[in-house]
Amino acid sequence: KYDASSTSSLLEAIQRRCAVEITVLNPANGEVRRENTPIKLYVSTETGREYAVMWSHSERKFFLTRIDRIMGVRLLEENPRWEQLSQDFAKQAPHIWGMSSRTEGGLQQMQWLEMEIVFSPEEQFILQRLKREKRCATLTRLEEGRYLIRAEVFDPYEMMPWILSFTGRIARLDSSDIRIEEHYRAHLRSWEELYGKE
Image (cartoon, rainbow, N blue to C red):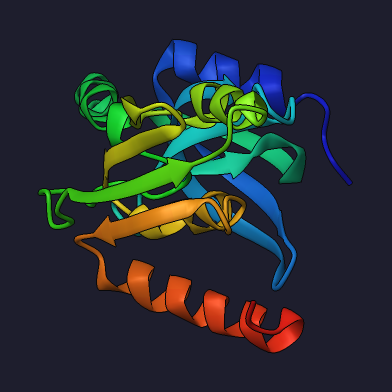
């Protein structure tokens, strides 16, 4: 059962700069205990869900966890590296689309993704979506009804669900991550099989 005091406990841990032992409800594995250091809390503007940015002691990287999946929080000792971890995350945050971030020591390289979107003059809601949902990406007008989205992120593959929501309006999709084009082509093939080619 979700512990409503989790948010206040995490805020206290951040204020005290200490590590925590959290019990998380994992949909696949049930309850799991982890030792992490909480750095910051976020509230999604899209869903209203609360997330905690944590430094994983075992995996040695930052990750986000949904607070409503935390069943319990136990405060541990102060983490002497808290200030450095906070600074490291502040540098990485502009390049995190969803949950993934660089591992300690910079082992994960920054990657890029570009997507050109086309739409008719009657579809200005598409432009509003792009402005509202682009997160850390940049939006550039190429011409009337054609816009370029460019993102430099640690894991472009996290963008795929959002990208696929523009299927039918994507004029070009390129990325340094080869999985992007492979996944997009597979998605288009499944659409052709389902709806037939025009």
